[in-house]
Length: 311
Image (cartoon, rainbow, N blue to C red; front, top):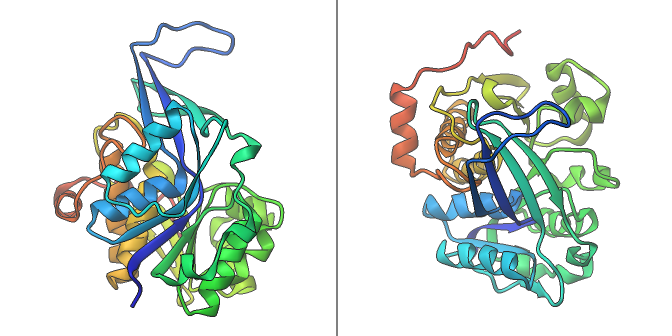
């Protein structure tokens, strides 16, 4: 058994949130009501979720040495995550995002930037960084580095989960090492040129042989194919304040659910509940819940129509 439950290799970011009463028309103007600095990023936020759920977590990535990098490191440290292999890049700004949140809906628009100096290279990933964990979670950004991490995991029988939202060059070399693929709603169609989500997920899973191929669907929940069968889990209805980070929290909850041995339907319901609760507060990590809180929501909350993605 590894020293850690989950090791994550991938992005972190420090966000500036701007709350506006409504999103303006193109080239329009709108006063903002509030501004706040908030740590986020795909893999980093997923790892904070795992830690909040009581798991032993290690994060591998790069940060800048500016104020935004310090905000990110403080957040990860206070979450109890091991940061032994986080590299602080000197003279470099951290990945940043400006996120405009529409107060009326909670939906957000993101503008982001990641300096090239933050790139993680494959030679910086050693076997010991990965074999210390029971599960590896990656994204698609520094593709050669995450490919290296996934290769090591597969060699040692460590399951790999991946969060991918767009088509990355060379990502076809990563997918053969993936056990659990959980993508954005756009990725399967973009990858396969098949618009039907069922056909797209089946095509990816059959080609690469992963245990599960799934996609998050925002307000509609999620759809997964596992064991030759599709499972659809509708989203929970909550008072949405900010959708930032909902997918990242879903992925962290998914890592937890798989390691806890949850059945597919139970796991997807749990992940939807965790994502929904995060939307009830501001920031990518503003509403990360406990398992008990998620289960309470699952018992009492209204759900979106199950017709949306049912065949």
